[in-house]
Image (cartoon, rainbow, N blue to C red; front, side, top):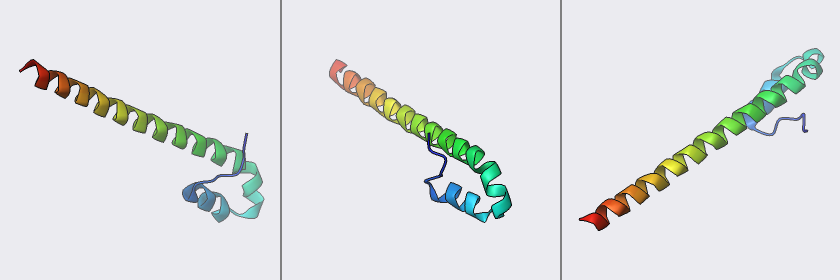
Length: 65
């Protein structure tokens, strides 16, 4: 598992900490970033599923008339 953040927000958060605290909180920041990325991916997946379902319902509705 990586312990260095890759997104600008989390990189800046870690870099803005005093050096004496970075090592202590690097793991927590990396974990928070992973959670954020998972939630973002889940939201995108749900949005795509909703769009696909909407297109399917719309297509079926158009064919039934």
